[in-house]
Length: 509
Image 1: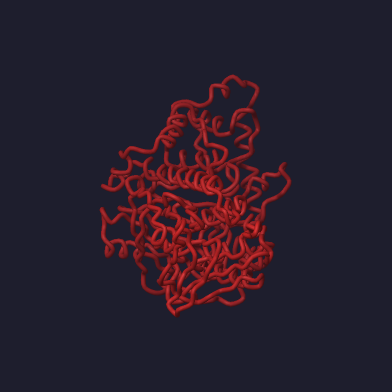
Image 2: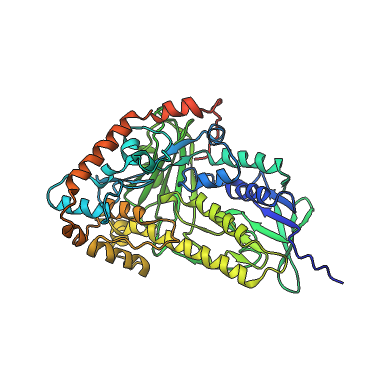
């Protein structure tokens, strides 16, 4: 008689790197030894290792694992990140900042930005980002932890991290193995499917070993060893909206300033990232092969480094898009095996994190109920699509005069993005949905940063005659400047709390 115990008994994670070891660590912490967790990876297969910049929710992932922030930053050569500076995106020579946390502090029923738009139409020359503590602190190289007192301007600050992805994976490997995760070295050469239902039964390694499991998690990167090569789920290609399909990446020496933000600089046929860590600066040039070539892209990258390169630029190829199904049968794709969205807003590691969180919230038994997998796929697909639209906005709202930029400025865009743009252009209103990763403050920063100007502000602002908005905005700017001036520099904060003891010479870009 078949057992009625349908609990998952064994989990096999295929692939290490950031995705594999984040998954292993989170499952080990959540399942507490109740089932076997085995991770298979090969030292012969390298990891992409470019996902060094993150967004604020990464703090929750580490906190859930009980990881000490200072110890984690020291182990990963990490720095703090207050947002992203965009250079030359809306037009050549222009720059703006996408800050973490609030823009300003609301002082009335009408959102602050409507009063700012009104005062701007009357001649006020202040920038929207001048009302953001994250920007003023980042501009001056300052950092301190936010206040938990909502009455303080310091509570409007939020932050994420910039770290060495290879060191983070190693850090989480130690965490996971200490909690019972088994690592197996080897390259997978074959995947066996059950003949009756097509579920994955086992993977076979080049040394002859076979590893069976109930649940398989594909963290094998772009290749999609299980989700695509074995299960053939298909892929949605989004290059007609996000045409960049190549990158070259290299690390360089840093100047000891430890800038508390990531920089994204637009070039003729793509853009360049700059991510400062404690021991080096990560750099890469993302570009569209239809408008330039690898030699030119590499030259542009090297000409725009801020320090001596450490190593030879490494080429990468990718196809922006996502799997048609992220969870199919008894296989869940997490990380690059699930899809790829260029790291313009540092979402790569976040998509790993949310996939893990969603898997735990919808954790299966061995029956793998179709309703459960459908919900995972619905939520994950929606997340990818809304992030996609946010990235498209950066490209579409531009007035640059190069072929690639003219192409993306005139292309047809997804309907949800067109709807958001129509609301903002008409009345300065923001309509992000509650479950979207990027909420109204994020859309506001990029809309204004890309110079998408509303035709009018909220009519209610003109009816509330008792609100001295100009004085309130000026006072807010003054308080923000005073708070930022009192902060330590990021270098001082790191030296005091989380300086790495040994500068490890890892070379991931």
